[in-house]
Image (cartoon, rainbow, N blue to C red):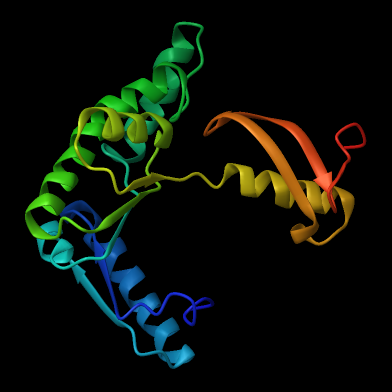
Length: 196
């Protein structure tokens, strides 16, 4: 809605599985109210049939958790029981989640190949780094972008610490999502790493 002039979306399809039906209906109602209030000509559709939503898609955005929050609890607790890190994007927990998630991403890619092979897939599903590497190294799909909001969140955090507008802050980062560190941080192009 905020960027409609830059990205004039005509239709938005929201997809979930049967277990998520209630959540899907809540999000659908919220989205429709927001679109109506903004006065934009965007149609909202919901379905439990992924292939229905993918037909003629220009962009596909993924954000899902195979196994739900119960699986996340296991991803984090099993490694900790063995004295190692458990988290959904790295360590043993990240690998557990990757092994459940990558096959689903590959199925989505197969559906896109069948239905609209020119779509871009923007993946926000963790572990985003492992998923992106798997897609780029083990499929022929090339229009795939893995994203993580952690670097953005770090810049927001620094802007609050420094009490300045976020647009004035830039960071240089290294690593993969949720296993990153800042190499340097800049305020108006000048390094403030030591101060931060």
